[in-house]
Length: 253
Ligand code: TMP
Image (cartoon, rainbow, N blue to C red; front, side, top):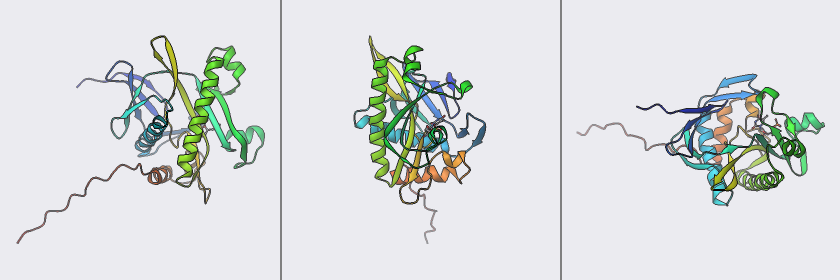
């Protein structure tokens, strides 16, 4: 058996060299971290759920014309994606106030935003992923002004799609984070949605009860994270299919 080459190990995923040039295998781990890995745990089954959910969202985005890095799911924990150059930004879209915007601006959790608000954080764990402005991004060359216009357009399309999908199953999309990659076709560069879209990177609240169905359950010790993610998967109909039950042998007289 040949050993696959590991390219990168992150907090929730490991990346391996793919079977063909320009491809990567994303392996979803069960590890959960919060507050820049100050809080850590292993949540059995989280990787499987996030793999399936991310497949569902990326495929859906592709079907409405939003380019993503996703190629196909390989198995319960792995998916094949197009290799791309990740722009070192976390792109956050907020529809309702939650998390850092509440503490930063003194807004009450749950307040509706006047319009979707797009924020950027510079991806650097040693700095705690600080919030940055377009000025920083352009001045330090992380992305061009044209890239940023394209990133905002992509982020808002993802927001419209995800909000609609979630609303359809009784869930409010409070906010989410995406990462954007560059792929090169000859001399041309295109931007695609990369990394993952899962309850690890979104805030999802039940519309009726306000129950949290995302990683805040882990961040704030609100109960079982697996139950929360399973609920999202069930509502969307993306639970791993049960194989046909094998009946016990019956004695024939
Ligand atoms: P925040 O309110 O903590 O800034 O988070 C905004 C959104 O981004 C929320 O949906 C959770 C997500 N997020 C990540 O995916 N990774 C991170 O490292 C952080 C801090 C937030």
